[in-house]
Length: 243
Image (cartoon, rainbow, N blue to C red; front, side, top):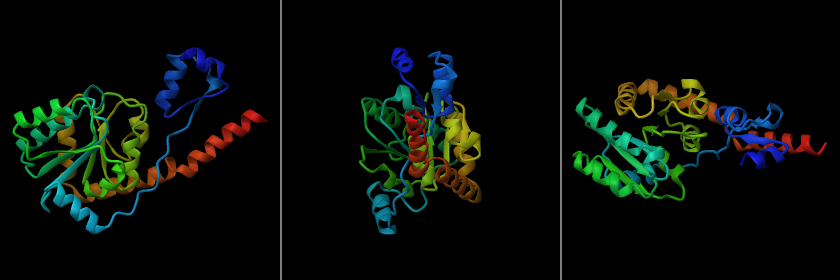
């Protein structure tokens, strides 16, 4: 990989964290490294009828507070087990209406299903499986949570932010940059379900705070993660290389 990078004119990192890794770990010269954030499409329009059908399908009542997460179900990476444990902690703390929907599939799904069944959370955790358009589920979600052990960027965070969903995620890799160091989304330490449960619990109790956080996230995403911005920055790099 380093040999390929050294032969390249420019190497693009998708976040400042990746850019630093390219410089410090791969030992690439500063002049080769460029940071260009990933991009996501604008949030699709989802009708109230579609949202109602989704809530009915997954048996979410009007009183339920839905926490959502998206990703391939590989627990060493995405740590969905920490979110399941966080749901259990929240229930112990009185947030009995908190429910978790995991959108995605993967090799650890069976183990995670066993975890929430053994924890008495069978009716509070839903696996939606793989969805071709996961972004259509974001209007169903009250808070988007990502408990990853590591992330170069965290594309699903940008998608949720673009949809105006307040975000709570772990402070790893490129995530702090995606969440504007905590101004566009809450940050929690990794591998600590208690901290995640506490952060989400505070959001449950603060409807105005959720609205402000969702609005801040959407504004930041529209400015920094739009396709238009991405195409402009890529075009600038290619143009500079052929001049």
